[in-house]
Image (cartoon, rainbow, N blue to C red):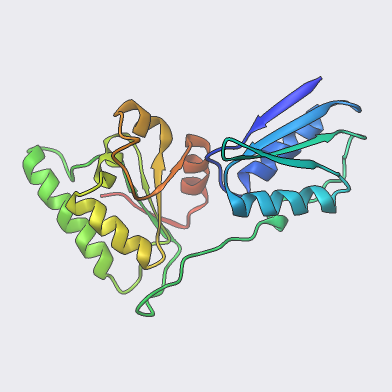
Length: 209
């Protein structure tokens, strides 16, 4: 039986976790094909498979990386995926440190009441985040919060500044598709709800205005 593991839009360790789950569920002789679109995660996954004695054939198709291999056993003693993750963080400028907290934005306005006022407050909030002594490690946007990343807006410019300072900007892919914004957004990484939920769960502190 052939199994396809589509890891497009996922960041490490998710591709490794999904691959391990597929291997655990497979039988000897089954073929597993992994599709991935992130160079760093690809490198981590190749090493993960190699370290666990799995020889995968590599190819590239329509901009996506493909790894195909045959399950030779139960692979019960596979190493932990998180032990094989390396990251390529953007450099921190102006010597600003990051702290273990994330900012979660589920709307393009701040607070309840007047939307015009809410948009003004949100612009001010993001401008203030850029100037804080301790930056968040990540900003996650979902629902109408993804509209904050629309190219040319003041809030997108703040996201660009945060990104230059080393802060990761993550956008909910389903939300981007719902609002039909795929061609309007030029900043941030598109991800999925599994990643968002896992990041929120594992974060030490979460700031949600």
